[in-house]
Amino acid sequence: MTLHFPSQGAIVSYLEQHPLTSKETNPYLSEQKIIETVAKFFADQDKADMGVDMGVMLTMMDLNEKLGLPQMSLMAINLNLTAALKDCANGKKIELEKKTNL
Figure: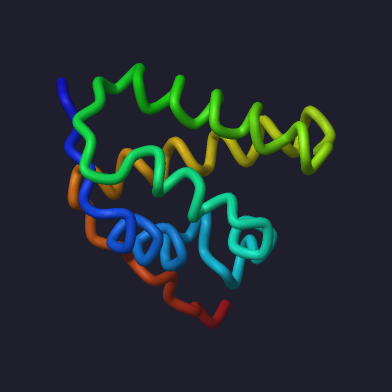
């Protein structure tokens, strides 16, 4: 299955709102231009499912030479970005988490 990605701006906007990568839950991704870099890589591209995994991994490896993240943080960021990017390419609507009173 091939995933089609929209423009860089559309990807950035999507990822900054996605529960896994949003500015609220993960401000580090925006502060370090991680979202921007990943969006630039995928903008207006068609990628196979596996290509998304590889693209995120390679982009994060390059970025991490500068950032020096611990391996566990890097893995978590990879997983979150990959899932959010696939949602973006699939046009999945972002469900804003509803606050529930327990």
